[in-house]
Length: 118
Image (cartoon, rainbow, N blue to C red):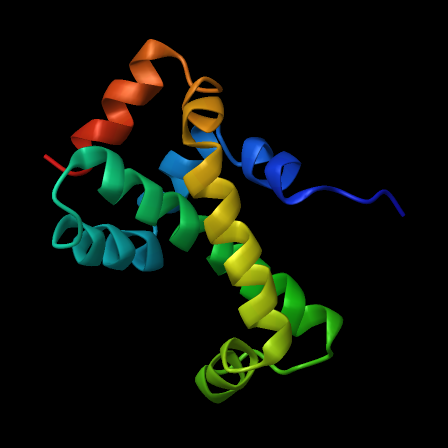
C-alpha cells in the first residue's frame, strides 16, 4: 500500500473533481456555508478545500473502521481523536500550501472556483 502525504492527498483533489463535488447536494451545502465565512474569496476557498477534503476523509475513515453509513456514525467518527488529528493536519496543510494547491488549477478552473463564491 502506498503512503500519501497530506499535501499529495490535497493536490490529487485539485482538478475538476472539486467542481463535480460542488454540484452534489453535500457540496452545495458546504459552499452555501462557506459563502458566509471569511472576509475574502481566498479564505472561503481555503475553507472549501478543507471541507471538501475532510468530506472524503470521513468517508474513508468510516469505511476503514467498518462503520455503517448513517448520520450517527458520521458524528461518531467526526468526534474521534483520529478524525481530529487528520482534520488538524489537513487544515494546516491547506493553510500553509494554498499557493501550491492553487497552482494545480488552470486559469479557467481558478475563475470557476472563485465564481462559486460570487
